[in-house]
Image (cartoon, rainbow, N blue to C red):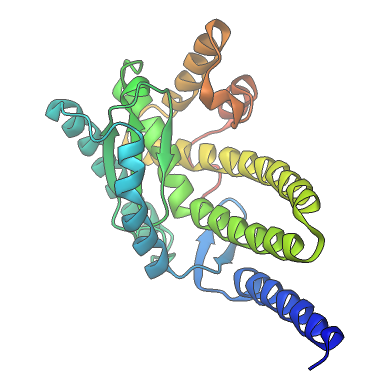
Length: 268
């Protein structure tokens, strides 16, 4: 086989590999669910079982990176209790819409990690984490419920799974470009993809805000507890470089939007 033929086959193999990854994570409806804010069924390529498995596999390393589980059992119990109340409200909300909307299908788990960073996180398939740095600054159960409801929204609306699928597609593209055109162009494409994913993430944050607001309503909490958390972020950010402000929408804009919402607005 000649050198030119080998080159053509190599290029063809790289292009086909990237194309197959993009097709798999763009078209295949691995998990379908109802989005109440868009009023339609949506899908993500990662099946529910994959999401749950990935969440379980990622959790140990993720927890270690954030200092491990916080040793205060009372704090863990408080977060678990409010999280369980929100999950109960999620089940009732789903039943009120006729059920089988694929919302409460994950083994949700709530945990406080010892990190002093001010943040909260959701992994695919249900694990939800609150840092001690954030929890220590929350003064009411409504504020805590607001944070947990927002993170539940990321899981229920498959934001975590969508971001993972986008990341896998971007990684495949960068790999292919690196093999074909070199590291410099691959780095440029990777940087552009990162900027696009930041905007996508901020759109997801706004949707999770609305989800958290409605879930607080249904769980008997003051839904403006989430807005109170954003005011806290504003105050903390004015005094320091707050990590959460670098990847999330402006807290002032989020407060103003929450103030326009009412319970049941997105659920006829």
